[in-house]
Image (cartoon, rainbow, N blue to C red; front, side, top):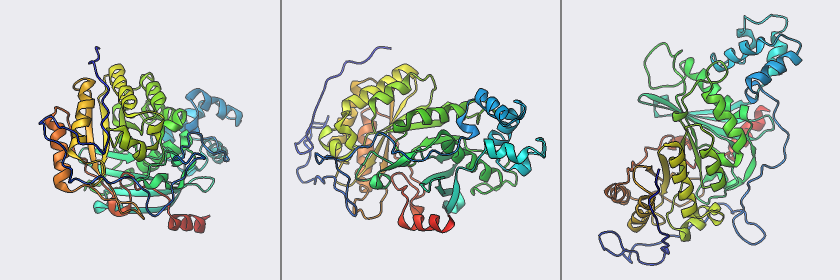
Amino acid sequence: MTETPRTRETRPATAPASSRSGAVRSTGTPQVRPATEGWTQQKDAEGRPLLQFASPKRGKPPVHLADLTPAERVEKVKELGLPGFRAKQLSTHYFRHYTSDAAEMTDLPADAREQLVAGMLPPLLTEVRRLETDRGDTIKFLWRLHDGALVESVLMRYPGRITLCVSSQAGCGMNCPFCATGQAGLTRNMSTAEIIEQIVRANRLIAEGGLGGKKADDHSMERVSNIVFMGMGEPLANYKRVMDAVRSMVAPQPDGLGMSARGITVSTVGLVPAIKKLADEGIPVTFALSLHAPDDHLRDELIPVNSRWKVDEALDAAYDYYAKTGRRVSIEYALIKDMNDHAWRADLLADKLNERGRGWVHVNPIPLNPTPGSIWTSSEPSVQNEFVRRLNDAGIPTTLRDTRGKEIDGACGQLVATTEDEAASAAMA
């Protein structure tokens, strides 16, 4: 596949910029600078936003069947003094019937059932709170992990699909000033099994008829069809565990969940070396780059990791993902009033994407979701529409995303463990 020649263009946020129509950016359009409100952004010794790539040292969660390969599961069962074939039976219960309840596993010997489940399926997530909206077809779960860390996931029914937004870290170390999740920093990476358990628990709830929006009496054949790694955390900063989880998602049942890789979206704010690694995995997941600004001048402030890998480096890596996999890339762009929603930025984004070729990318502008303590707001509808129109007119397929769960703080950028959540968790401990 040949690569379209491209040039490097920089356009300071404070300077006028010409659009393709020749019009100059209106000097009356304000330029709001990113700033934290209601919280203090963590800084390093040189005063720059702190980036946490390494997980803090904490006690590891117990080893779970979903942490192990099929061969390792057999060996683990043998260590427990039982025949290896019991591993397949356990996997069937967990990955096909979505249960860790020994009482339901009647095909296992009664005298060994409890021992086997305790050794292979230890509890990982304790449900602290469940909030529902959209007539019950959007559900946000608050989970407590074994060490007290709190994470959230959001289950959403859409026409023709059921999507689960999963967390990959407790907290986040990317420190983006507009995102609630990063305000407290990174607590720790989640294990492979903790990631998978979010899906298994969601599937169990669906099978029991707990997800609204469908009138059928029998939900036993329904399950999560789409996964988005857009919950708490930067997925590519927890690369190995996230990819091990993806392998379990796509492995045929009962070795895994039997999902389609094309229904799994892995997002990142732009960890370029990990994007390149992802392209070589040979697993055709959908890749999403959270860009939010096409110019380094603004993105340095809006997305602190841009101080490591600039806009063009991130876009080059995204294009290379498409070139290697043939999978169209998604560009996520939170539209923030008077900050990154200027018409000239839509033009610049279109220019940068088209410089790399045609047909390789789709842009998802997202009206900013409010977070506690922030006065930042989403763009005006007319501004959103103009932003989308300019991209579409430039030949860039662009769809304004319909955000779900705002009423329960379950939309993009809103997932965070609050003081109230911590109090509820402590009361259950």
